[in-house]
Structure formats: structure tokens, C-alpha cells
Length: 132
Length: 58
Image (tube, rainbow over all chains, first blue to last red; front, side):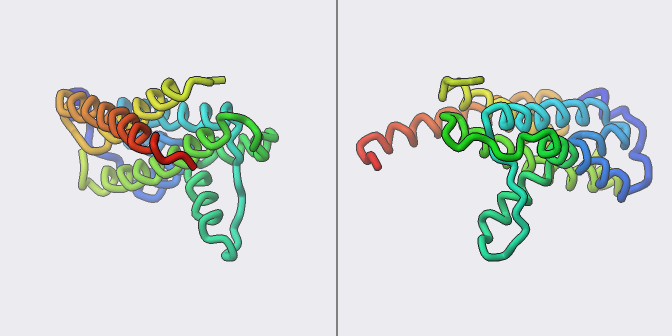
């Protein structure tokens, strides 16, 4: 993107960039001065998560080892950061398993988190100067 | 909420393609091209897979 090729070099602070990127999708890029990228990540991943919750997704919190798939699913959802914990705190954790869109909602929220892991890695690479 | 399966597929493909294109390409034109290709691949592969699964009900 033209605006980004002329953007100032990334600010130092790999850890804050990665932490911010986890807490709020796109916030790490905004912190690093990559405004367009940050806003796009915030919009797209935020929309995936919100639509998932609206489609009655279950916001799972399972940290045991007896069910590895449930653990991976929980980690994927948690990777979206503050929105996940906020939605749980607001009472959206149970979802509605009988809803037609339940599985779609689960997919939206988990994929939103998985994409945010890629965004966190991209923020890391940007902070260390490996990417523009 | 969204009730159409096709609409859900289109929205999902659009959002995921936008993130992939932004992550994987630096140039605006390349991003647009990659995003469109990715979107088309998502939608077409889902439709083709759905069609192939037709003769094999659960």
C-alpha cells in the first residue's frame, strides 16, 4: 500500500506490539504506525468475532488435557483477545447449540482467533524490521 | 441473524481473504489481486465440495 511504503520505520517495542496485537486485533499495527493494516485487521477480525457471537457461537474456556481438540478450540477463540473475554463477561459464553447458525458461529470465532495469531506474528516481524 | 448459508459463506470468504491479502502482499494492486483470487477460491471450492458431497448423504 502506498501509504505504508512511505510510513515511518516501526517503533521499537516488540513486546508491547505483540501484546497489543493480542489484546485487540490490529492494535499492534496501529501502535507501530501501520494505520491502514491495523484498521483492516480490526475491522475484519472484529467482524468475524462479532458475527460469530451473533450466530450463537459457544465461547469455550477449556484448559484441560483430556480433550485436546476442545483445548485447541479454546486457544483459537482466546487468541482474539479482549473481545473474547468481554463477550464471556457479558454472558455470551454458552451460545445456543440448537441454533441453525451455531456451528457457523463457532467457525467464525475460532477462525477470527487463528487469524489474529497470524496478525500477532506479522506485528512481531514489523516491529523487528523484517516486514514493512 | 444471517440465515442464508450462501451469504455466510460469502461473508466468511470476504473477511478471511481480506486478512490473508493484507498479511501476504505488500503492494495495493497485488493485495487486491490476491484477495480476489482467494475469495474466488474459497467460494468455488466450497460450492464444488458441497456438490461432490451431494450423492453421499450422512
